[in-house]
Amino acid sequence: MAKLWGGRFTKETNKLVDEFTASVSFDQKLAFEDIQGSLAHVQMLGEKGIISEEESETIQNGLKSIRGKLEKGEVEFLVEHEDVHMNLEKLLIDEIGSVGGKLHTGRSRNDQVATDMHLYLRNKVQLIIELLESVQAAIVTQAKDNVSTILPGYTHLQRAQPVSFAHHLLAYFWMFQRDKERLQDSLKRINVLPLGAGALAGTSFPIDRARVAELLGFDSVYPNSMDAVSDRDFILEFLSTSSIVMVHLSRLAEEMVTWSSQEFQFIELDDSFCTGSSIMPQKKNPDVPELLRGKTGRVFGDLVGLLTVLKGLPLAYNKDLQEDKEGMFDTVDTLEGSLSLLAPMLETMTVKREEMRKAVTQDYSNATDIADYLATKGMPFREAHEVIGRIVLYAIENGKYLLDLEMEEYKSFSAMFEKDVYDYLDPENVMNARNSEGGTAAEQVKLQLQLAEENL
Picture 1: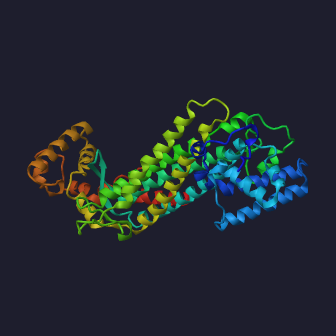
Picture 2: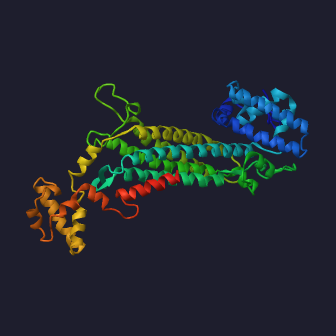
Picture 3: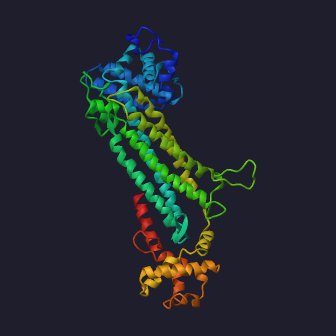
C-alpha cells in the first residue's frame, strides 16, 4: 500500500527500514490523545474557513467513530503506516473518503506528536499526584496509631536516639509532599500547546492556535515554532521528578525490608504483599518492597536515556526524538504500579510495638540525654560528652545498659548524678524531651500530623 507521504519517492521502503523506523508498536498508546488533538484542530479549521464547516463536521464524526472502535479494541495498527498518526489518518480516509486527508491541513506530525505527549503527560501527572496522595494518606493513618510507639532512630545505621515511629513515617510524608509539589509545578510546562508550529516554521494557513489551546484546555501556546517541535524539556522534567520519587520509594522500601527481617522484627508485612520460597518453606519474602527498590534503576535509566538522545540534537525536529516515548511510557507505568501497591502495603502492615520498645531499652541511644542532664547541672557539654563516653564504655564492658547501672556506679563518674537521672533515661521521656518544633516529642508529632492532614 502506498505511503501517505510517498509522492516524492520512486521505490518502496525496504521492509527492514519500515520495521526499524516504525514507532506504532509503542506510540499507539497516544491514540486517544491523537484523536483529541485532531478533533480540536479540525474544529478550528472549520471555524476559520480553512476547510468548510461540512468537511469539518464530517471529519469530526469520522474521528469519533474511530475513537469508538478504539474503545472496543477493534482497531489494528499496522507497521507499514509507521506511527499512530498515519495509522489513524489512514483509518479516517477509509472511514469517510478523501476528505479525511484534509485533517492534516496546517499541521505536521512534528507538532502533532508533541501535542499528543503534552496531553498524555498532563493526564498521567495528575493521576500520579493522586496516587502520591493515597500513599500520604496511608502514612498518616499509620502515624496516627503510632504517635507513642518508640523505636530506635538511626544514623550511619547505628542506633542514635529513640524516636516516635509516627515521626519516622512522617519523614516520608514530607518527601512525597515535595514530590507532589514538583509534579504540580511541572504542569506549568506541560500545559503549553505546540500544535500550529507545523514542521518547524509555522504554517501559511490562517490558523488560530489560541482557539485550539482553548478547546484542549492548554494555558498558553509555544511562542517559537522551532522550540515547539523540538522541546522535550517537559518529559525530561517528568523523568527527573519521577527519579526523585523513586529514590524516596526505594528508601522507604529498604526500611520495610530491614524492619521486617528476623534481625529487627519491627513490622510484619501482610501476606498478600509477600511471596514464599520454592525450596525453603519457612520463608516469607518481602518481594514487593524489594521490587520497588529494584525498579528505581529503570526509571533512572529512562532519564539518562533521554538526556543522551537530546544532548547533541540540532534544531528542529530529528528522528532521534522518536526515542522519547518508550522511556516516558515505562516510567509512567512503573510509577503507577509502584504507588498503587505501596499505599495498601503500608495500610496493612503490622507494627510490632513491643519489639520496637524492647530495642530502645537494649542499646545506648539515651546516652545523649545523660550528657544533657549533666549540662543542665552546670557541666560544660564537651566535658559531659566525655564523661558519658566513659560511662558507656564501662557499661559495655560490664554487659549492662544505662538503666541497669546503680547510682553508686554513676557517682563514680561524677558527683553531679542524682536519682532523677533515671527519669532522663526513660525511653518515653527521652523521646518527649525533643519538644522543639519539628521534633519527635508526642506533642510535636501531633502538630505535624495536623499539618500533614491540612496538606492532604
